[in-house]
Image (cartoon, rainbow, N blue to C red; front, side, top):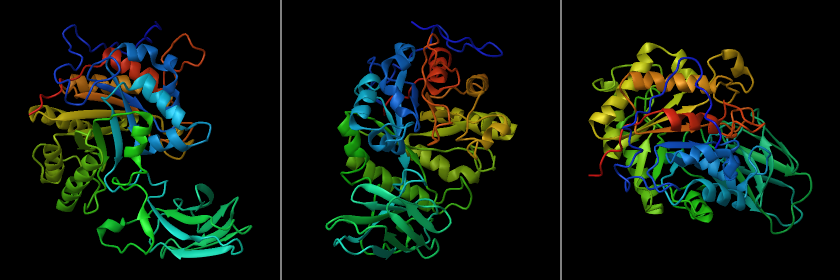
Length: 449
């Protein structure tokens, strides 16, 4: 068995001999490959395929605490991507699930409006069916549309993308887009073969569901009820997640976390759609994180009223805690996070804390243009300090999640928890999750009502 890496900086070992490994409610969120209810989860977008190699997580899985976390974007890449830091295929997806997930206990993450990420198309619009001679096609996506989300697709192959400045380029040809109106014109270098279906994929800056008319021929790519999206993908790989973590879109909110009554209603509708599409999903939990610069008192402020309402109606929530963002932020911000967890415990709610790479050194953030997607050479040390501070505040969550949500290969990958390996890096997802599983305590899952 590989040796657990030494704790960096101040010693902290939070697990006591009386800690139960989340056995209080085995039917609440399913069981992992060890037959236990997991309270530590790991996942990634970039590098997720590395979970399919058993040696990468042998020590972590031996803890008995671990479950699988995948976003709908990560699942998409796991099955369909071909880039070196994705390497997706059905076989890859099955290898990850076979190695890691067991029959359940997994977390699936997605967005309330059905989109997986701003960088992938949320909608698609048919441009036409090729006749073997026509080269130029046009359509209107009824803008405004989001830059750097457009794709021209010939059958199932992406042949061009927009550059963020109004131009469509790629191996298939060239074209242009008006981001304001959504009008698109594209000319293929050679006429597509007769019978080829040509589509435009795109995102809108304002989802259609909020009143904008859907243009004729458009459909949502990531509609929860569609058989060709995530519910069929997870069955393809044999996965049975039981919790859906939802990024609430906040269509009616005035600030980052000031949710409106419309947002609460949207989550109710989305929860219904998700559970109808996949009855094995038992909980649909929103992310409720104080990442908007307002740090009013969590338990009493009207600013958080609809956030609390969301948490209570869904019986839990998750908090997104990029480690460097947490450590570099104010005491007022950190107090909201701790108060959220304590409030969840008082109200018998599930609460997950997601730890993701985010360097405490702003110089590291220039690599990919944002701290969230750049290297984090302090990930282990920062994660340890975040866990220490949360524990010291008397606010251990129900579960921990260690995840990267970057499509950049420079972001910390899954890696390996085997300290004997030449590829071992303590700042990878597997290494940090292994430390969490060995040292971080949790509160018991609430008993099912």
